[in-house]
Amino acid sequence: MEISIENSNRLLWLGRYSERVYTTLKFFADQFDAMIDGGKELYGGYTSRGDFAKKYCFDESNSSSVSFGLMRAYDNAIELRREIGSDAFSYIQMAVYEMSQAEKSEAPLLALQKVVDDIAAFWGIADDAIDDEKIRSIIKLGKRLERVDLYARLKAPDGLIRREILRLSSRLPKTGLKYHSEPLEKLLELANEEKINHQAVINEAEKILDTSIDRKL
Image 1 (tube, one colour):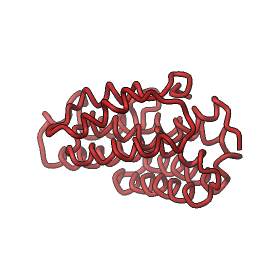
Image 2 (cartoon, helix red, strand yellow; image 1 turned 135 degrees about the vertical axis):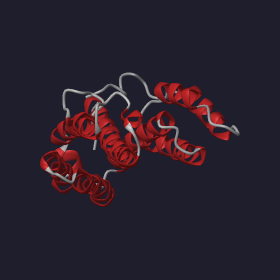
Image 3 (cartoon, one colour; image 1 turned 120 degrees about the vertical axis):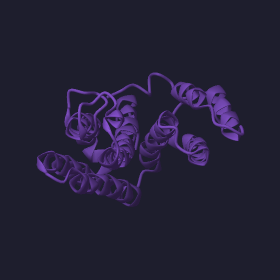
Image 4 (cartoon, helix red, strand yellow; image 1 turned 60 degrees about the horizontal axis):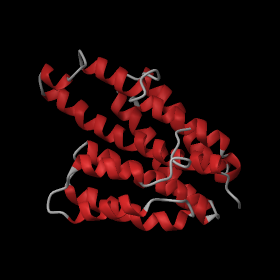
């Protein structure tokens, strides 16, 4: 199947946004648990645990919120139903439904775990049901690119960041997309350093793809 530049963007950002939801929800769970045991200093810029949950998870007007990322994944999935198939699309759709239920729930962590499960199921069915390798690879590239960025921003253990950089580098040639080799080489060099330079990883990861491809949709 010939993939247009626009749909390449949509596939990439479907992968990026779905990964963003998955990883930020896991981060949210850790922070929410810490707030239960800790004091107000753990709230950061939020006034309470409830305020944190509402704004971080459910405020669609906040581009950093989980809900914003999920709706952008949904928007792209709608436009890609022919490419990804109805089964894969249905799991993104279910994640949106579970997010709306979580917002109403008195036990948000339990409800939000269903969103995490739906995203994981989306990746699984996409890998199994999408025959076109380029389509699968572009979604996975988005996932890996976002994970490298998020892990660096969240200062995940160095071993996890190294692992994701290597997986990103092995995925790129399978997509058929144009990319810049110099920042990729620098990223691999950073992965080999004794201590990960988080900001350098973020900077180089942002430069890998041609801007005509890595354009938010």
